Amino acid sequence: MTPPDRLRALLAEPGFVVMPAVWDGLSAKLAAASGFKTAFMSGSCVAASRLGGPDLDLLSVSEMLDSLNMVRGAAPQTLVLADADHGYGNAMNVQRTVRSYGRAGAAAILIEDKITPRALTSAGKPCLSRDEARMKIRAAVEAAKDSGVMIMARTDCRPTQGIDEAVARIEMYVEEGAEILFLDSPHDEAEIRRAVAAAAGRPSFAVLSPGAPRATPSQAEAAALGFKIGTHPTCLLSPSAAGIKAGLSALLAGEAEASSAVPPALLRATLGYADYDAQAKPYIV
Image (cartoon, rainbow, N blue to C red):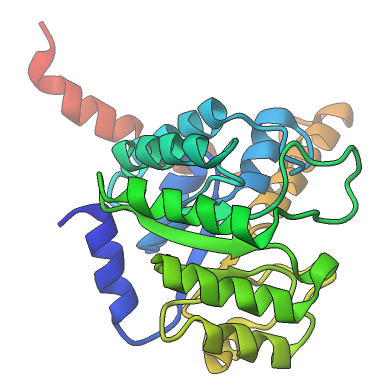
């Protein structure tokens, strides 16, 4: 089975699917080793790791594809839902992005309706008109036929245009053939239930990390509200940043490593030194 078909099969099973947010080979490998079958390649995490900066539409499609290749290379069996932001341009750019992600082995791809280039501010989420958003998702669904990659349609219009418009867009995305739906920034449980109902039985996706001004249910609460998939974008990224800071503080204090450091033998095992030796043995002259 292809990655998209494997993800469809997984989503058809009972239960809530938790997707850790990954951004490179190490994060993907550790998530897979922990038993996760799926992962969300988060644009915010990729921006943090590649740019050391915010998730404000600064990344290019080539950088995201490179990150997807790293994730897939380190965890080839992981079913990756890959963030593609706004598709990196108009409807034709969206098609190129979808085809590229599909060839790279993504199981699903996220396309959103925010305007690009965005206004020069980190506040607000100005969005395309409804008709323009429809055409982007229509283009994405058509391009997805090449690889079978699943299309997740996201609307960001709730903060600026209200819940009625956001729900109308989800209904529109269902009409256009999107297989996973995502309402960003719901205000409360009532809005979540409206969005899940608008998805008409197709899986709904939730962001479960705290921080932004949105309803943030727990995994159990998300499942009870009707969500099928949830991700925690800061769950791995935040402790990674804390670990780097702890290591730097230890160096500044004249120490060799932080008290939280992974022991050298465990680090080498995690990175696969023994696996390399075993795989290389038949080729030693």
